[in-house]
Image (cartoon, rainbow, N blue to C red; front, side):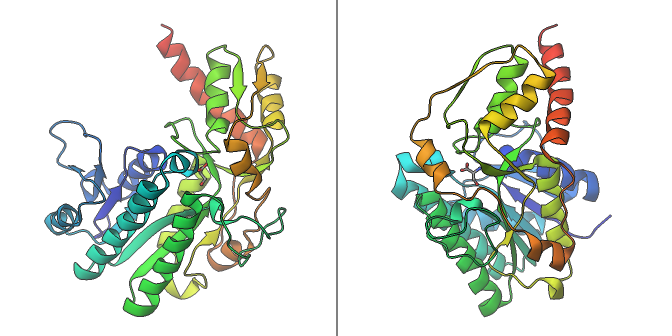
Length: 318
Ligand code: SER
C-alpha cells in the first residue's frame, strides 16, 4: 500500500468514475478521496462534495485528508462550452488555478491536468499531428486547455510543482457516460446499437477523429503519474493516441457484430468542431519518455464494449 493520498476532482464524470475505481484498486479505498459537484453516496467517508470554484473548500478537503496527489478532471467540454463561452473559460481556468494554488500552498506533490486534442486547430498537419504543433484552437474549451497546459508548465518551472498532463483523444468506455463533448458520439452509438435503436449521428460519416479506449486512457494516466520525473521531457501536455476512425467505420464494426444496426447522419454545429481537430496523433514522445503503447485498436475496443454492454443491457431487460 502506498503512503500517498489521492484526490480526484470530478470523480462522477466520464473519466473520473473509472479513474477513481482504478486508483482505489491499486492504493486502497480510503487512500482515494472522490470529490464532485454532485452528491456522493450518503455516509461515504471517502467522498467530499466540492465545487472547483470554491478554493476555500478545496483547501479544507486537501488539509483534512492529507492529500499528496490531485487528479483534476472537472471541466466543461467542447460542444457544451460553445453555448456559454465565458462561464466555460471561468470554470476551466479558475478550477485549474485553484488546484495549482492549493497544491502549492498545502504541499501536494503531484497534480494531473487533462488536456485534449481540442488544443489543435488551424495550421497543423491533420495526420499524425506532432507533439510540438502550433496550437490555434477554435473552441473555448480548446483555448482553456492551451492556457492550462502553459500554466501547468509555469508552475513546474517557477514553483517546482510536479504537474503532469495528457492530451486525451475522444475517450470511449462502457463504464460511464460522456457529457458535452464532440467525440461523445462514439460512446452513444454503442448504447443505441445495444438498445436496438437507430443512431442519429451528429457528425458526417467520413469525419475521422483520434480516439482511445477507456482502459488505455486510464493506463496512460497512471503510467504518466508514476513515471520518474527525470524521464519527462514535456511539461505542457503529452500527445497520446489509441486509434482513429470515422462514424462510418465504427458503425460498420458494430454492424459486423449486430447486423440489424442502422445509423443516419444529421450533422450539426459539432461538425465544425470535429473538422478543426486532427485525424490522428503522433504520440512518439510519450512512447519514448515513459513507454506508452495502446493495447486497444478499433476491433478490440468494439468487441470489449459490446461484451460489457451486453451484460448490462441483459440485466436491464430482465
Ligand atoms: N472528448 C472531448 C470533447 O469532445 C475532446 O477532448 O470535447
